[in-house]
Length: 470
RNA sequence: GGCGCCGUGGCCAAGUGGUAAGGCGGCAGACUGCAAAUCUGCUAUUCGUCGGUUCGAUUCCGACCGGCGCCUCCA
Image (cartoon, rainbow, N blue to C red; front, side, top):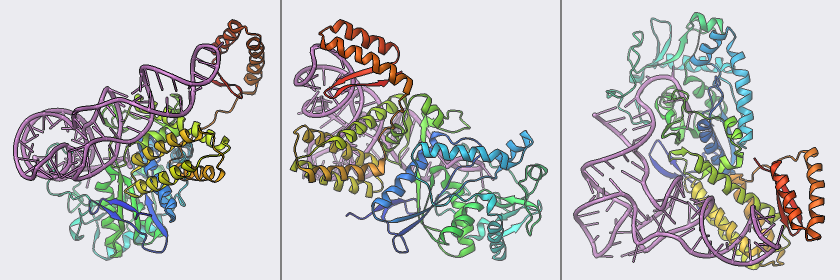
């Protein structure tokens, strides 16, 4: 098996990867801020992380994945204050929705989904360590800030020269309490709306709440140790989020925070980044409304490399829908087949080797998907020969399972409506009678009638199949 | 202004210093009473433009054109 390689944002190169301890990969994946349902752009990132964990598993590693749920932040507090409720009341339904959407898209469960609000003591301890190491200070506004000029190596991930923020950049809010404009908040002094919405806790620095980056450092180190194997997230988190996580974590522990940083590119819509700010978001609910299967969306996402921007377009989604349907058809054919040919076995073996090779090379899913489709085409041709080689067939099924185990592209089956099934069944019986009597005009009339009801039929060697259409 | 990514057939998209994977669509065939579905085959002398390096470049270098992202709370 070829070595597993992954692009490391820290070094900007594709590097061989092995976990530091045994065969368990400890990875931290930045999760959603739960103030609003996640959009499909967010899910592109989560899908890339799902791909990573599945490929790691395919390679024989054990995966220990942590995905945080950020359940306290400015936007959540704002929403809670507007509605006069607590932050918990804002986040509870959103978290539920997140998991429902995630499951719909077949994103595997992470091992742990820690919540920021449940790790306040850990965060306070981390800030204390930073304060005692003189890397953090409490300002006049009572908030605690990280002093970036005390941390040697600040900027190593994003490679941004923090002194060079020029026109075109988003304007820095001038916070007079900070010693340096680029210092970031570790602990924010409580404001009335924080207290009102239940977003304030006691701390050595007074009532307050954690800064944005703090939870990830605290929770990652709690569950995965001070040096993680892989830390993932969307490309936009490189700066400031991940840069600040490094500063906090390494500042406190004196050890490298993550051995490898891995970032997924954006999903674009209408040529620009999908973002709530831009107002061009679509959600999983929108996908469902368009009649797009989860398998189709997975196919769509995996047809472009994770480090490349992907544009959401109707045409691309439709192509993915058809592509995943073809895979589903093949799966059915494979499970119903009686035997194969010697060549089928060879074709399967080749596809498996190549597919795993592509996936191992910095998660080249589009190339691996190409291998998968080629396998399907060739295997179909072999199955046309009606061979009787059981072992070859078993081999082909195994390959299919292994590759599809990563992509997970078989479209979900529709649950038939019992009442409709009964009606269609009786009309089909009539049509069968008409056909055997040679009355094709009548048969075609029944077909048209059913189509008018939204039922399409297909005559096959083993009888007539039907399905609902739009 | 700084940093970075990208530009491959009608659409989507891999890839490589040695002559273009794959999917969708389209076309043709098999199957079918006819369809549909399915399967099979075909579908880029060419990789944004112009130069350069090289025996040879889509792949390396430079310039230009076009698109996108990041530059403090956004996956």
